[in-house]
Image (cartoon, rainbow, N blue to C red):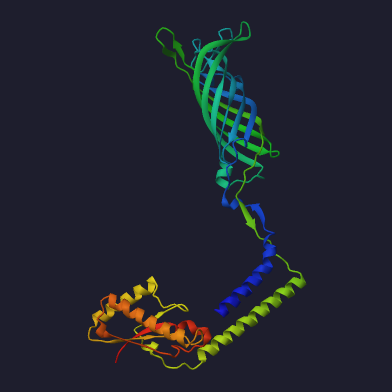
Length: 408
């Protein structure tokens, strides 16, 4: 026990000296462990963009390409919920140009007609569309390459849809008129973002959309001029990001590498040397104890040995369980007899007290065996005034016992 105590003291001395420096632990974000979700108020943005488009409907290829180029613009607000997923909601508007026949939904009969490749006469087509749009956004670079707040380029795939109100352009008054035609549309696009700083991005967006601009017969509510229309647009834009724009990483503790001063190092070495000397002394004492000649004692061939605390002669519940187990062995061998010997150490107390303890201990074990059903004829009791082990005062606890041996 002394050896263990001194070793613990040495360890406490070492760790106590270094405990002062443990208070210098710093805490840093470690993105290798993933990312934490930001509060709802973070990662919002607004976007404004504009550019040109090309119309692809029933007869647009009959017109010259330059006469099919229109304009596109939009303004949106959105939020990134993670570095990968977000959404945006806003308003999109387009001016579309192409070619159509004389019964087209947005035919301009006052324009100069021209012969198409089939010999049919076509007219200029020009109309506008305006309506809400909602989209999901997927950052492909953050998804495929991992989140990097210092990355300059980010590619974002976006897609969704919305609805348009259409307006026709009349050549006679050069004004826009409600075409009384509403349509739903779906779109998909790819946004090439270039970060100027943590709040502002410039981008180039390429997008394709499809919508149904067919006219309806008000009497039958059936389509009479089917017109599935596709639009491809290219836009440039700017995004402004509000509040916190970056994503936080889990915080981990970093223990600094402490460099001791010469005085601290010398003191630590001295403490280690002192602890080492104490451990060596304990080892020497243990070796001396193990090498000490021991007298022969009957505990070597004992069936069982029940130990007691100092000045105690009653059995604990654990020891009662042990004695009951021994009783089963005795009853299984009815032809054998057993000797119970009571012991007490001679290092504490006096002869009167120790004699009483020896008798009370051996009689208590005998009574427990009898209660467990062992015949009294199998049991002999006695006491011994010597030490059971004679390990010295440090081993006195091993001399407070009752031994049970098989009688010859």
